[in-house]
Image (cartoon, rainbow, N blue to C red):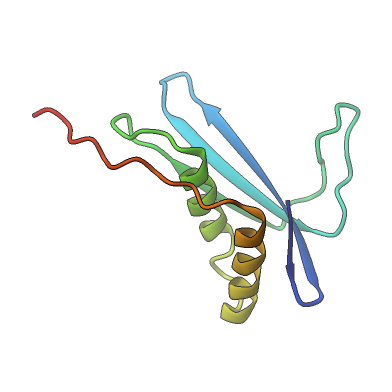
Length: 107
């Protein structure tokens, strides 16, 4: 996904994985410029910023929410105005996901 803030162009790559313990995690990798693909077509460009999130065992996994939290953590140390423009670029490309209401856990 290409995110733009003025002259700054960042490429964002999201990876969702389920661990051996059944817990889902999402990682966001950001880098500037174009992607450099390997033989399998995956980007191997050095990632300047990485953000990640991990569900607890009781959480329900939603890709959209994992992407949002991981991206938020990857952008954390950028200037406020740059973050704002990158979020506008993200939301212009991403449909707003409607998450179902939380189901209370049985006690």
